[in-house]
Amino acid sequence: MPTKRSRPPAQPPGAPIPSRAPGRRPMDDLNLFIIKQLREGRRSFGEIARAAGVTENTVRARYRRLVESGVLEVKGLVDPYRIPNHFLVIVGVKLSTMNLVEKGEEFKSLNGVVSVAVVTGQYDLIVTVLLNDEYNIKRFYTEEVARIEGVQSTETWVVYHNVNIKVPYVL
Image (cartoon, rainbow, N blue to C red; front, top):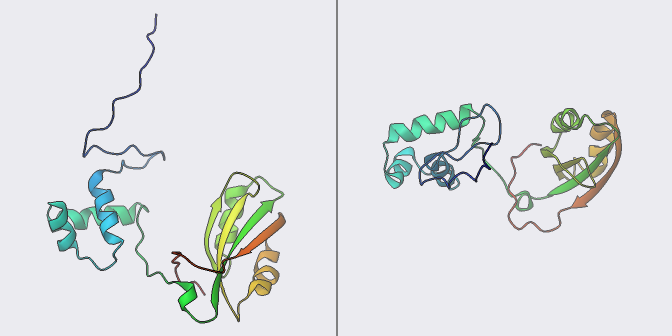
């Protein structure tokens, strides 16, 4: 007679954090430490290595693997509200198709799009868009969104005060 399975024991410190995506390497504490150190943007691999208690070559190798695997991407980010005449909108998109990921890829390629997420709930996609006085909401909808088939409806929220959003400059 089969026995009832119990929960697996908690992970010991330094053990890999299980990945939820198939085919991906597990994330361990050192990888997470390196990623957190890179949030400051200008820390050298040597500084990170000293703080982690490992060699600089270890940090370089881990960094390279994180970038190659798509886990980490290092970019210059801007606060759009500190650039004159720039602003963000967030768009909820309802689709008339269930090809959500495919449609998300189409939205990703539109001018001004910073990010696209396939979500649950009232909308199928949430799209973050960087705009300015020249490339505005009207142009985004009439020149870009109008090209995508299967858009049932949208709702747009203008971010009127930015607390901590930083985005790549995509215009």
